[in-house]
Length: 165
Image 1 (cartoon, rainbow, N blue to C red):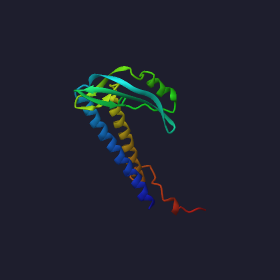
Image 2 (tube, rainbow, N blue to C red):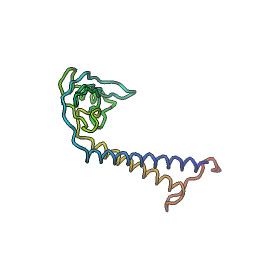
Image 3 (tube, rainbow, N blue to C red):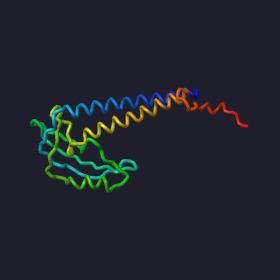
């Protein structure tokens, strides 16, 4: 039973890792090959710091018009900002004030996909790929180690079967 759970944890790690790599690769391909975001005028509706558990995050809502249709969004950039330090979220909020006119960058293929600060989409995709690779490698190593397939690494035994002296 012990080996079953070890293998299950390893396989879950491998699955999550591959999913992150796949998702990150797709996002990187879209960011690299897609048309550039179109700038359109927008207006800030509200800007505040919100507490999410033990973290603080900026919440900036804005309205914009693309191809004659009105949209609302709250995406600031491709990588979300949240921190246990309120100051980091406040720094973002301080850049945007209610009723302020802003430039909103809209995906020309999907006008509901917009952000205020473009440019980090490729970085976000690369982070997903790197994290996915690390999690996948951890899962593969974990599985091989617990199956005793790595020379020099002794497979742990089930602690419930260990004898004490």
